[in-house]
Image (cartoon, rainbow, N blue to C red; front, side, top):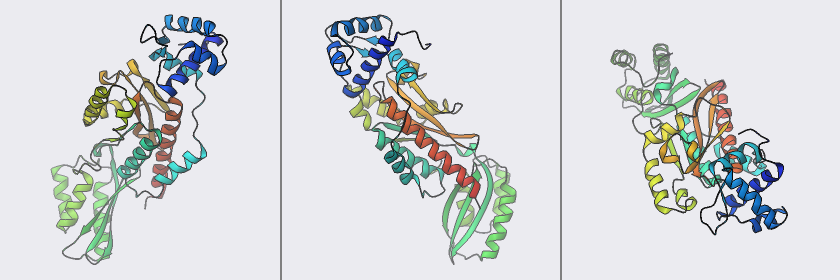
Length: 345
């Protein structure tokens, strides 16, 4: 829809209806709008609302009820009528504090990011992690902690560091660990994690004399514990029960969000874009989301898209706050990944 199709007066009325409905969750009447937003007489506002309904921006759920925004009404509000998304300095400080000091593990960082996003928005937060197949090995480092413990680190593009603390029955001297690190790094550099051939596994077994160290390396390259291997993260699913008046719909959505492939399908579609994107109701390509709105942003390292993070809720979503917080969290992840990339070893 092109800006300027609606008259300034109708834009004021539509903005007021959307704002009030997001706040209250109750159909909005002309008397409420006229009084609360100083828009003139209720009769005049009623006529404007009737025109907006006829044009598809508003809907009337019951004959005697007020109006609620349609998907088109929400879309027009987000694109044209809403104030630019912004967070308070307190919210920004809270996000940075919650995410600062995270260990250099992408899964841990993203899980913490989705938790803080769900907490601050009171919506269900979703995130997409790069699968092992998307990550390219850069370096392996085995560091002696004490006589029988070694910290094994795998650095992969884009500057992500995963680690395992390994207990060794037979101690390995630091000089020998360094030789192992150099040899394994040389063999793995440029290889995609999660796509390790049988032949390469045999080569690596010959380079790593310790069975415990070899098993830890294989676990880092192709994790199976669901920590780094699961591509989709969901936090705050129970918020659906509070945000949807239809309890059965909320329970159905919670069940659908348990399926990794469904969440991945939703989030993978946003990887090709930049900035904060909003999918409203029927705009969602997935049928199970047609009564929901989704706010998503991609996080990057440099120019490379790494994953997606966002929130899901009813179409009566607080778009202004959600877009601001999703953008802030995605930008913060990007900043941290870029810092990791610059300072890795």
